Length: 208
Length: 60
Image (tube, rainbow over all chains, first blue to last red; front, top):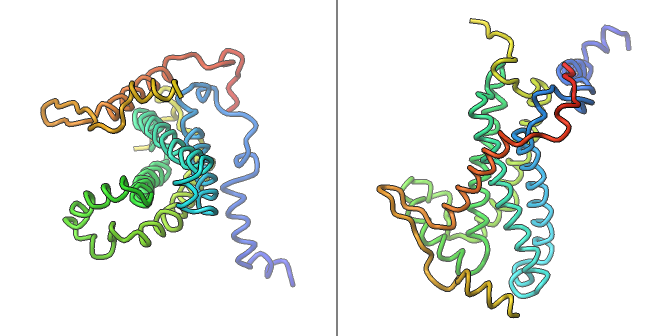
C-alpha cells in the first residue's frame, strides 16, 4: 500500500489525532506547575483511589453474595470497607468540587472537564442510592419504601422501580459503575489534555 | 467486649437519631458533623503548607 493510502486510513488518522492531543509526556507528565503544590489539589486523586477501593471491595462482595456479607465476620469487614470507601469517595469528591468551583475550573476551554465531573458526581449519587436499597436488610427495605414515593412523584417510577431488588442491584453493580468509571476516565483524559487549571493570577488573558 | 460496650453506650444505634432544626434546615447530627468535617478539611487544605513546596520549581 502506498504512503498516501496509509495516511488516509482511519487508524492512521485516529492515531495522529490522539497523539496530537495527548502526547506521552502529557499522559504521564514528569512534573506539574508550581501552583499544583497545594493540598487542595490532592482531593481528585483521593476520590479516584477511594473509587478503586469501592470497586475492589464490590468485586469481593459480588463473589460471595449477601448471605456471606450478612453472616460472616470477614463478610461484615468487607461490607464495611465497601461502605467506608464510599464515605471517603464522597467526602473527597465534594471537597474537590468546592475547590474547583472556587477556582472557576471551567476557565481556559475546560468546560467539558467541569461538565464530565458534574455528571460523574450525579451518577455517583445514583450509584450510592441503588447500593443503599440493595443491601438486602431492614435498612434497605426502609430506604426503598421511603424513596418510592419521591421517585414515583417524578414519573420515573414506571421504569425505575426502587422496590425491585433485582433491577436496583443490576443498576448498582453493572450500569452505574460502568458509567461512573467511563466518565472518570474521560474526566482524567481531559485534565491531561488541557492541564490543571491555573490560579486566576497565573492564567493567560481570556480572548473576548 | 468492654470496648464494644463503651462504644455502644457512646453511640447508641438502636435509638432514633438526633436532628438539628434550624428554620427550614433539618439535618441529623451525624450528617451535620460530616459537613462540618468537610469544611474544616477544605479550609485546612487551603491554608496548610504543602511539603516540599519551597523546593519545587515551575516546570511550564
